[in-house]
Length: 151
Image (tube, rainbow, N blue to C red; front, top):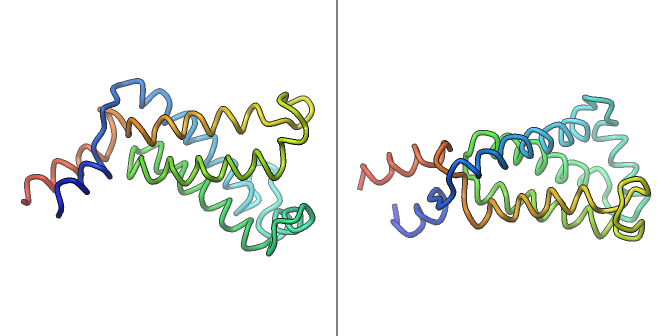
């Protein structure tokens, strides 16, 4: 496999700080995705979330719910593990950006008004993981070592 591609996908210049960011944010994202996909934790599942998304202009609603829920759930799980951290973080950052501008921005900053502060925080953490990778304690390091050994 191309060494530059392996480094881009699996390499990291992050330390333990990346773990501190990855795990709680990954768990939060996975839980939000589970609400959308499976109606867990008080969520509405794909049907209900899809209807709501369609009502705010994100059409087709069911597909948008599937995409957002999958990005959050599977991206969140990948972040917890540190598996393909950079691509997972990029997908979750994009998902949070869509949430900010399609749902929260017009409500202002604060969560008390359904504002964008929380989604912005998740966006910024995800973006930082795009740049630094999963850190020392990530599955990505194990994969990178195995791929490098097989050259």
